[in-house]
Image 1 (tube, rainbow, N blue to C red):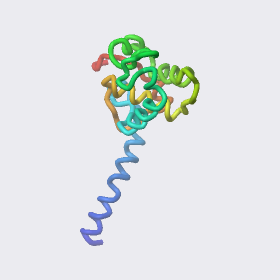
Image 2 (image 1 turned 135 degrees about the vertical axis):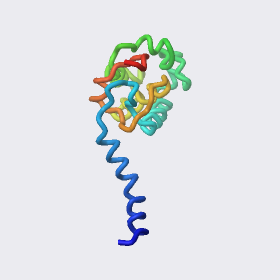
Image 3 (image 1 turned 30 degrees about the vertical axis):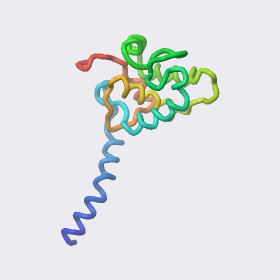
Image 4 (image 1 turned 30 degrees about the horizontal axis):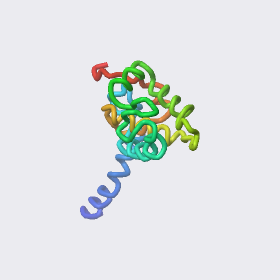
Length: 142
């Protein structure tokens, strides 16, 4: 096999290997270890804009609904699981019931909210099991 052919194969397979490694990565043990991906948060921002921004505002400051960013949001959810936030979104949002969010879309919205509140992204998408195991905590050292 030529060096050029091997190099081409490696360059083509490297992204696939990275994707497989990210999916095989263990779930984060802390919200600060990256519990969602940037891509998931981006998809969640679209869902948020289409279903949530009317009440919670595009900047998440709240209007008819409470703020979803900053101290008021963090105070409300501090010490609770990310899964309880997910459940709140799944069972009560959007308030006018025009749309019911699928698990994938609700998880995307949660990822978007985590991103906007300063929690870091990681190599794995947030899933229901991981959400239930993580606690919203504002201390990076825990």
